[in-house]
Image 1: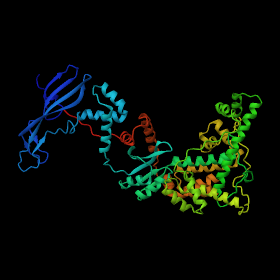
Image 2 (image 1 turned 30 degrees about the vertical axis):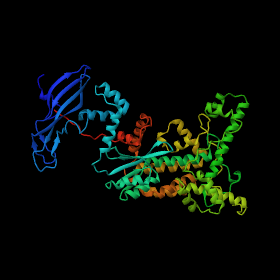
Image 3 (image 1 turned 60 degrees about the vertical axis):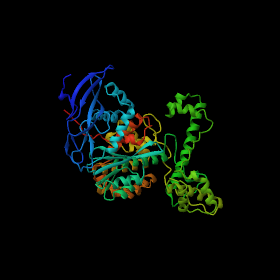
Image 4 (image 1 turned 90 degrees about the horizontal axis):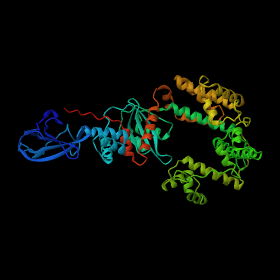
Length: 560
């Protein structure tokens, strides 16, 4: 067959012939250049030391596999004092050293592996006439990700966590907010790893984060020069959670109402800890609400109503009603399996120390830290506080403290929807409290009016929520301190707690009002990560997940 040099896969390669094998595959025979260039001294030589053959997979022809069989030379360096006496032909524009496919095929393998994964990429490559195994695709994908490095200067980043296994194992994602691309994926969620990454990138000027104190500490440690920006969505979300918590005390779809302190048996209010009193009263109200729902459902059943009719009258789900009617008493919540993050995991050790007289929280925290405790000091203090209250009540040394009710009990009657007559749940009430009047539907506006008329606390919280929303959207930084003071003076424990947390993180909150950056891009990338993780069935490691999340910035290689 006549030689066609224009069919050459790369410069310096001479095509000798093309043949079709018995299994309908194309084989292209080619020879390397007629001279060699030493990689050390760059001297040209024609002194051939020997021959060797190299087989490369190339792009298909008419859906058939193409194999390029190259006959290359090993040369002797013409310079006598050169340390490299012999060398082989190198083809940097055609294939990498020791590669079994050309660079243009390797590029397609990387693209398909990045977008589809291992097995889907294997099926697609086979259909295109370039058969490659799934293991080869994943190996190349990981190898390219390990060799990739960002040469550009990173100025604004967003940092957020992602769950490899929810409530068990978390990682960290870092996003370049200016280029809207993932910069890196860290395998854990810790101050040390995030701080080390920031130390390696001193060009970072702005860090957008959620309300997690872990990342705030990492930024202070690894990038003290950077300005922290609290995410505005999380600020509004935290306020909505505080409103929902407050509404769950004054009225709930389950019929829960906040009871006065005299109705809480076996509890002593702590005058110096209103938050602890608030939590105990909330838990007691929650238990009372389940009992009220249980009694209501069984009373309606005794009157002869069906489950569907009870669901229509009460607004609860039919399946939940049918399940509750099979019980003789409200079912207790199943206690979760203890983990090293809970101080109860070390209950036996703590009980022994408590009996021996070691009751200092800091000392006990240090002891269980060495035994594997990974929780916070506040969790341990809550457990010890309950033990101290039980110890005081058993000794009878503490005189009954005067009853101070931090929440008014006049809102005990739940607010009902004017259209359906069902009780408005705290979740719905909190969502409506955060929504401006112009965005409400007619039915939602009626619910808001009913809530404002029936609950003074809702009217106050809606006023605060609208003001806070206006501060964030209008960039009105001068009104932020006034809003925090008004929220602290509102007397509503969840709102007061939210305002005090804002004050502790005031610099990041101020930057959130002033600067346009937010963590929205990071949240979107996390949604993409979830899709890729589920497509991999959760069985691949963080290395592969990082390889598929990083953008493809590889140059395209074109040969004539």
